[in-house]
Length: 225
Image 1 (tube, rainbow, N blue to C red):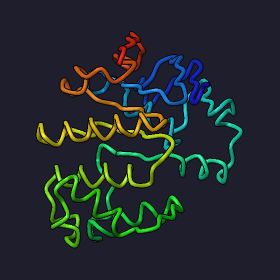
Image 2: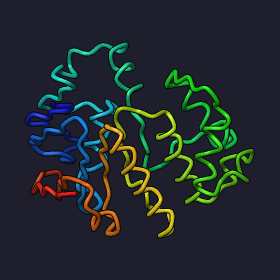
Image 3: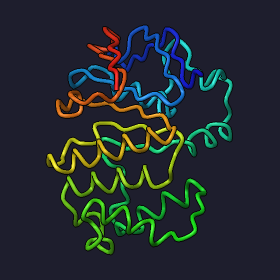
Image 4: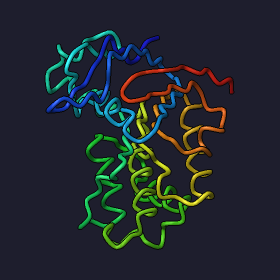
């Protein structure tokens, strides 16, 4: 079943920078899709269109058959609650603690869990961050902040995971851990859409690889798992 469909989608930023050019792309339910390409290829812009942080200049996006242009703010909020998003620039609340940042994700997703504290610490232990749970995020290294961003997205157990360069500041051990988590998440029946140029991830047999170059979709490669 089709989850996202992009039909002839272009995004142009003033004065005339073509971030995306005439993109036709279908992303299926429970697909593991990897977007790759050099810096500036259009990966982040495409992800922003999916979670409606940006609107296309032309063309149309569909979510489960419904055009984004017909969705009101309430509809969009409902769709976003189905998503866990790992932002390239983290978008953490720097004055809040690690624990508070993660808990806030559960609150915003209106996610009720039986033992919230145990769940949060379970994720923190997995990333070797339990000892820093009560530290302000601004005190963490860039790599540690990246891990908090990943935990924040995954802990809400979303239907759709969208991750923009989630391994950019991480050591090889942490990269392997994130790959394992993303695989587990996908195996449970969720959709993963991952933008990366990390060669470690690209060598893994995770799913379909879509390559962008200067805003254009230039290839699809189906990778059997």
